[in-house]
Length: 437
Image (cartoon, rainbow, N blue to C red):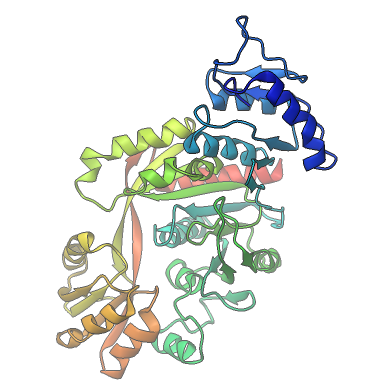
């Protein structure tokens, strides 16, 4: 509540709460600010103990620490609590596992039960195609190199009807095999298939539908996928989010992937909630000039919300999964059009091919179909395993006798609090420590 309300009005509202919320007992209050209707001595007698703070958020933290409530009831209003402040207060409640209710809204903590029986690291992001899969696959390769390969559990809006285990040693992940899978009616570019192909570890695919403001899917089979992963001999799990959706199970540690265009997603709405859940923030640089002009500002925004979080800056570089040296290539990606020239130049410089055409429309089927008509000059269609990669791009290429090579996006560290490899492995060790404590 706030000091813009006359104390008897707040007291009456508290007395009426039990009639609106059965079995609700008010045990304390946070004075968020406002002095118009406070007494000269600053007192605010509303019949229950009151705490305050320098900011609304400080007052909320003080109240949560003192009263340990099961519900936060918002009796405040403009001008003390605007939308930004209110969402900050919601974030603090949800992080404590406490519901937050107002006059015409309610936020409940997303249920994330402890399903995994092994240490787990979640990889989440600000939205779709921010680099979660590339980061998950890179982490899995690091762990495999260290001798502790994980199982990746992924969820997607095109995932299989039931959790599907894919072992890259036995599952046909060739272009032809995936086209046949697509012709059977499956989404043959689902994240778990990309993970298996690029990381070379066992993956489990699940599906989800919808996503809430705090990252909960409306419906998913993810928990069943984790149960399946528990039965595997691998000792670690990588839990991969989907879009803004967060894996709906408990994770022992969390890596948060943010594009360099994502400042608003960090600071607006429930963006701070994802930040405060995380142990490491990975900023993906997509703009070559941003490293000098904007990275420090974005890092400052991150640390302004989560002062103790560690930050890594990276970029994603295209990496053909088969040799393309000396070949002419038509390159297809989901990367922004502004970055495609840099990526094509990297392919020519580092992999010895000649890029004769590009398309940034992998996620836009009509435009991709138009772009593919220009692929005839190429010997190879080089395509990321995403979106329409299989049912449209690979199928088109194979029908015209072109070779299909899938393209990964590999992590390259650009600075921060340490290299990505160092921070990712340290985060895994932290997950193991937390799981075993």
